[in-house]
View 1 (cartoon, rainbow, N blue to C red):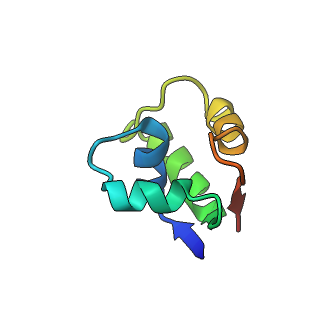
View 2: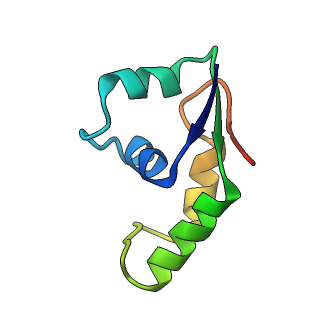
Length: 79
């Protein structure tokens, strides 16, 4: 299955937020699924961070590194 994660879902997933349902988390972590995140989500994260509406621990570069090193057998692909 191919999953396109919206910004909110992606941020909750990488933060381990308890608001993300267990079903959603299982689908993202399922190594048989391909996960995608839109480049627009990264743009949205950058804008909200600059406007101080979103706080990310560390720099945006660290977030990009996390994208490629998630504890998944497949990377989250940007589209």
